[in-house]
Image (cartoon, rainbow, N blue to C red):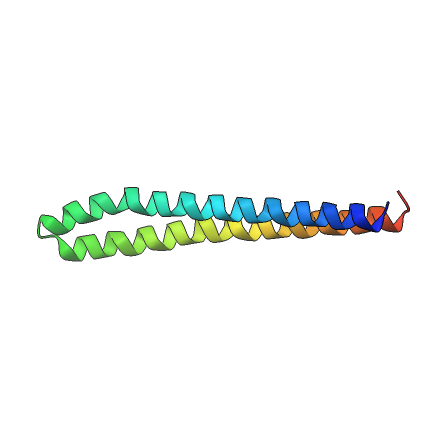
Length: 92
């Protein structure tokens, strides 16, 4: 495998990783916006304490889910890079 091919493969791997990260960020923003509506309604009904508690739970759970998605994405990209390096080391 040529050095150029390896570099191109690694660039493609990182580009895909970046696209997935940006897609996950966009999905997170949409989820937060959608889930903000019930909190806003609770708040407007004078249930500020309940709204704040719901918001805390939502923020925590949404954050955990999308942090996990980003972590998995980075690990997959690292694995792809390692596999490409192994392939290069084997002369394929």
